[in-house]
Image (cartoon, rainbow over the protein chains, first blue to last red):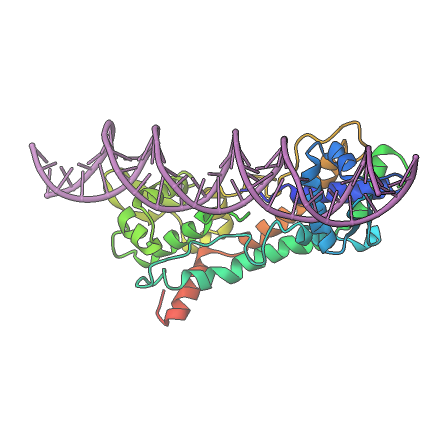
Length: 145
Length: 145
DNA sequence: TCTAATTGTAATCAGTTGTGTTACATGTAT
DNA sequence: ATACATGTAACACAACTGATTACAATTAGA
């Protein structure tokens, strides 16, 4: 199964908040761009806020980035929106037969392997920032970011 | 969400078929070690067979590996059991607003980034083989594999 | 102070997926 | 023929995603 699109949506709205920094990025405005429901955006925004990526205030329309674009990695977003738990990208069957040679060892044997695989993936996300995302969009649109 | 445990179960079964190579690895026998239903094993076995990793025959009890242990990587198993589609580890929201600067570019901008992350993870799986898994189990049990 | 607009959050629903279970057709050996 | 195995389809059930509705709490401004 795939990792929730919350991650992609998170990147989307953070990039949009930046590009719309002269305007007001309300949950309704952001929802219209993502094409979803404002409540979905607000829930997501709560996660991003909790992780210190955005500033939002009850009753006040609009969200702002809490950090520089170049200081927010895709890994930050990934962790913030909680799409994959630590060391749980791969799930392992829980109750193998302990009377079996393989059954009683499989979990410990596999764990470092799948953990390494997950970490390799996350390292890549760590190396890309929202600045890269916004610059790429600007390039595609031939505008200044 | 996590990647299906079919992957871990696949590794489990293949390792067990090898270690039990003097005996008969029926779906019932394998299911007892994994602690699941024989039909689940048979479905999985169908996938492993289709990918040329095991040999099984209708009506005849027992499965055998179709290749050397050292010639089966974890990536081979991963592909065989079909847990993650190509370029679909991360899902991306499908209908962004094309009238929005970000909406009409986000998919193309994100795609290479998440694709690179997925590939990095898969590369790690490519570097480990079933031999590594079996040797580790043997070491833990202090036996010869 | 009252009103309108916005965020925060919970409850609910439909659709999808993963896993287990049952059942049975098909194939093999004796 | 009989016994036993695999192959496969149908179904149940839980868990999760994403959308939707509703409403309390908060704020700005008339």
